[in-house]
Image (cartoon, rainbow, N blue to C red; front, side):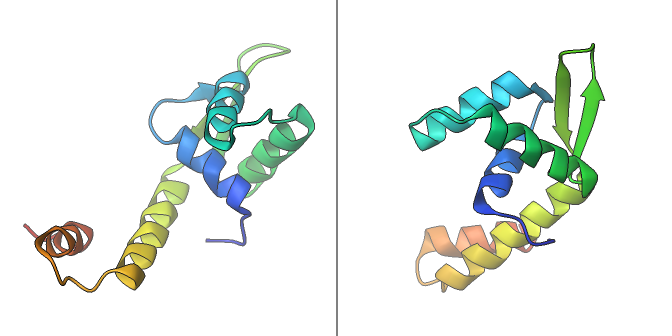
Length: 107
C-alpha cells in the first residue's frame, strides 16, 4: 500500500461496503474519533485517495459526490490486516488458530 496516513486508512475502512456521500464518511469518522472532523481535512484526503486509485469519486451533482473503495484498495487493506494480525498472534489458542486459518483461506 502506498504510504497512507492512519486517517486515510480509516477513510478506506469507512468506505468498505456501500458507497457513501462525503457527509456520511464525515459522520462515521467523527463517531470513531469522538470529535468533529473538519471539511478541510476530510475532502482533500478523499481527493488524494481518489488520485491514487483507492477511491472512486462519483459526481452526483454540483455539490454532492459519492465515494466507493476500489478493488485495489480492498485487496491492500486485506493484506495489511493479515500482516498485522499475523504479527500479533501465534496460534496459541483456538480462536487464534481459527483466525489464522481464515486469513490463509483455509477451512
